[in-house]
Image (cartoon, rainbow, N blue to C red; front, top):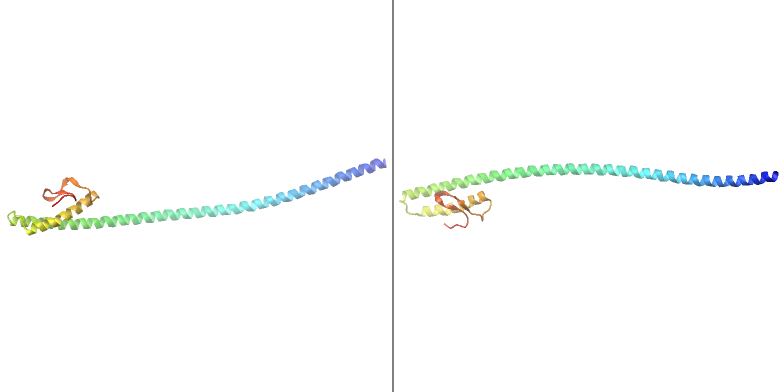
Amino acid sequence: MVRDFASRFIQLETENAQLQKATESSSDQLDQAVKLAAAAQREAVKLKKELNQLKMKLKEEEKEKVEVQAQSKEKEDSLRKSIEALLGTAVRMVSSELMASVNSVREKKIGGGGEPSVGTATGRMVAMPITVFLCTIHTGDENETLDEEEGEKGEKCGRRRGN
């Protein structure tokens, strides 16, 4: 009985030692798992902050992009209006000069008995470049001719035509 008791005691002590080793090993593994979880949580928080910063940066860049587009549109509109105003002024000036030249030529023709005079030739020299200019404004292409449209006194509007 003492022998059985001693052998049983030794066996239980061996099992106890093995269980303590297993418990220590499990405890170490649990500690490592806790450390890994804490590191993962810190990394998740760090990544979340970084993601929020990137989202904010993206929102700011999008806002700036919209502002730049709005400013660009405003500048384009302003430039377009200025160009239209300048072209309108130029066309009015050229038209009034052309009309003055045409009237001058008409007056000289009427007064001169229909014979071409120096004034008529000068009027044609002024009228042709202005006609070409007006045709260019009308078509948007200085090389395009407008055979269907006629200017003053039946002259065709176009760059390739002669006097």
